[in-house]
Image (cartoon, rainbow, N blue to C red; front, side, top):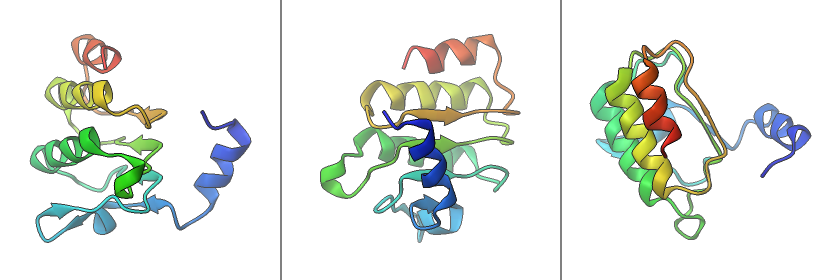
Length: 116
């Protein structure tokens, strides 16, 4: 797990942070080199969220994916999206932080994420 100072330094650095335009390319998802996925307020659809969660479920450092933090703030993903996040977290042991502020998740969605 990253120490707080290491994590803050990671967020200040520009290279490992991937945004929507870096991740979704021609109908596919590219995670190589991403340590932080920051999609706060970038207008992703549920279909894009599902594809991203599927990719993160299979992500391993050996295939170039080393994602440690995921920001999904300000997206109305609701409980259905929270269920996808929870399913991804069951398989992905690299992600240490997930941010889900203002996402329309109810207590059922919180339980789905925490079950992951």
